[in-house]
Amino acid sequence: MKICSKLSKRAKREQRKWTKKRKKLKRKLNEWNSITFSLVPFPGIDPSRELKKIEKTSIKTENTTTILQLAKYLAKKIDLSPGAIEIVYNNMILGTQRELGGYEFFKERGKKVVLHYRRKIVQV
Image (cartoon, rainbow, N blue to C red; front, side, top):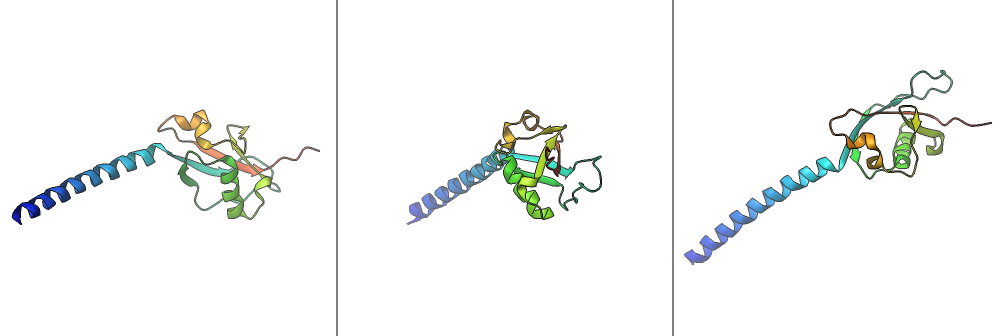
């Protein structure tokens, strides 16, 4: 009986050890699969087209999130349809079907990325 209890204690210790290692690895993986950025209204547009600012400007999400999903999130926050919003980075409109992780500016670790949003400009 003593041998069985010693084996089970040893097995439990090993299991705890591997559980800790698994959790640590999972945290590292989540760190590499996530993207953090700021989302603010586009500056310098006329007040009639200006959108309201969202409360939580700093956002952390997975790198597989698409621009369309981001626009839907934003539309929900500011009561507007997702099709009426453009997400902009350095005066470049980001494509709706592309994932955030696919853009080069997100691949540089430690760089602060600021995305802007504005009403979609309608061509007449």
